[in-house]
Image (tube, rainbow, N blue to C red; front, side, top):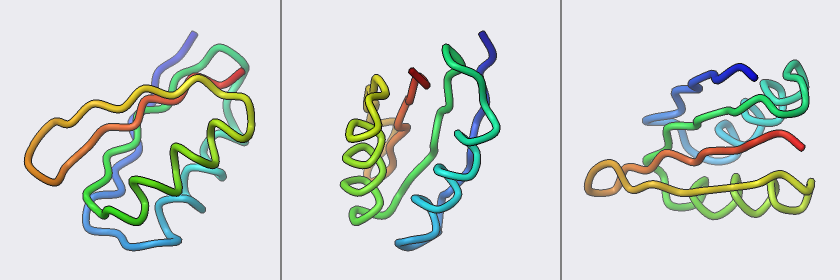
Length: 74
């Protein structure tokens, strides 16, 4: 199991979602991707998309208006 960090801070939709999709496509099942997000639109779209793909998703608020979306690839 590998863990990667994807920095999407300062990026607006749909860039964080596209970057997340591209990064997960290169990862193996069981790997974990941590996506740093500070845009509220992406904060909704990225976890919703990941869940629709059957991935496990956790969200941690790491600062005011800043989150880490933790996605485990199924």
